[in-house]
Image 1 (spheres, rainbow, N blue to C red):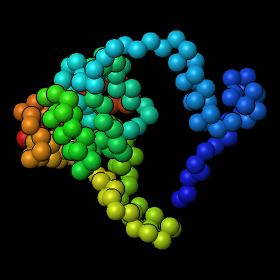
Image 2 (image 1 turned 90 degrees about the vertical axis):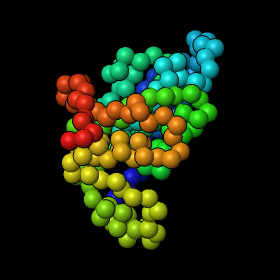
Image 3 (image 1 turned 180 degrees about the horizontal axis):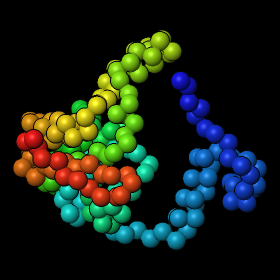
Length: 186
């Protein structure tokens, strides 16, 4: 079950080591150098222009800004495995609302999510492998729509959030790119 921390990349002329094999992180740092060379400070505030926080899965197939027509500065983007509303998501949403002025929350899960095939056995296997039980729950689910409803309910009932009237949940289809809204009352 172990995952290597860094994997070597094939040699490339863009490598930070001048053509020698580097890591994925090396290539990202090099890409940042290119980005920073033409970067200009947009002069933005940390407060999202559209006063919205988007909670989504960390899945690499979802380009949230493109999918939602958002630009830099429009929203707070909060991601985790599954896009599940955990205590840390509530923490981030509370800071987003109370300190930085957001009022709306959009929750996005997606089709073919890896959490649909996991169970809490993942934690038990991990504990057996490393000798320490994780303090966090996997938050796996079998019913995508029901988990979106549960996430909406967790946001709506949090005593820490000021604005819970505009909380909507969706499922992003990774094959079509379309959002399907979930009825919270189903």
